[in-house]
Amino acid sequence: MDTHYVFPPASAYALNRVLYSLKSDAAFRERYVADPPRVMGEAGLDEQAQGALVGFDRDRLVALGAHPYLVFMAQLRVAMTREPGTFEEF
Image (tube, rainbow, N blue to C red; front, side):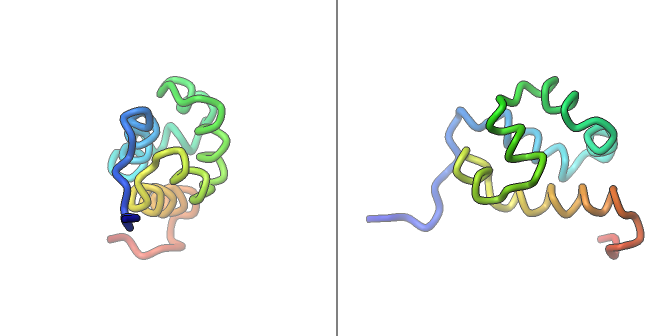
């Protein structure tokens, strides 16, 4: 039986940790917006994950094991940081 949701694999922990930090940690998010390659490298993301994260390629990120909710929220928070005033703060 196919399931609708598949839990992220342990191999995607670093990627999901970065996404969670982008969603929840304003200081981390500011560092990421200022220098994404450095922050992703420090977080230990491989080249595939880095490439998918730079463009927030949802399908690639999920295929790499990212949690869909974290992808959505991280992308939203990064956009809010890059373009303050464009989104209503919540």
